[in-house]
Image (cartoon, rainbow, N blue to C red; front, side):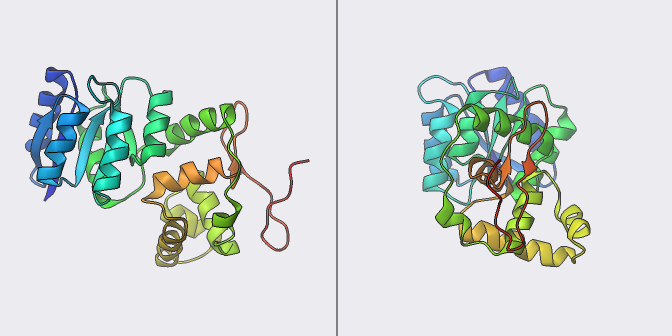
Amino acid sequence: MITVVVVDDQPVVREGFAALLDRQDDICVAGTAGDGEHALALCGRERPDVVLMDVRMPVLDGVAATGRLVADHPDTRVLMLTTFDIDEYVYAALRAGASGFLLKDATAADLVAAVRAVASGGALLAPTVTRRLVERFVAQDPLPPDSTAISRLTPREREVLTLVARGLSNAEVARALHLAEETIKTHVGRVLGKLGLRDRVQAVVFAYENGVVTPRAGGYGRPRAPTRHGEPQSPG
């Protein structure tokens, strides 16, 4: 059973989402909250598997609440609720530890599927939207790469990270590299472990922020061309 807490400052939204989710055989809503502070207290008591978290709220917003929540309860996954997909607050929430985001006008089927996907640690529903969001804000405010963390990866693990960051599923990565899907799952697990990342979403953010893939104006990220030894070439 997946336990969920719904957090939104609009009563109609949070009660509507809560009622919809509670009707599912495999989902139980443990409670609702109207702001981030209330949400943290509720999650401390209930320890839910998934929190649907509104981005903009009074008292404590969703970004700050997400950072505190994932620090205190690393097993809880946060799915951000937002009105606009390309939003600096959503990007900040992903960096703070959120596992994905969902538009508030999503269909009932998409909402349920998103909760199940995040609870299982699976891929996002719309990796292209995630990439588009990350690309935009990485391009605006580039950070120096964490070369120490990147150096922990083998050439194969780096290759897997590149494909994951481009939005490929494990099955798609397996086909691209002509490997078994179970082998890819093992590589993904090792990448997350070596880099100290929670899930695939954090892997996408890390890959863009550290130059494993690079934003491209008007398009999606492209991997830096590897050398014979698997190291990236310097941009020309």
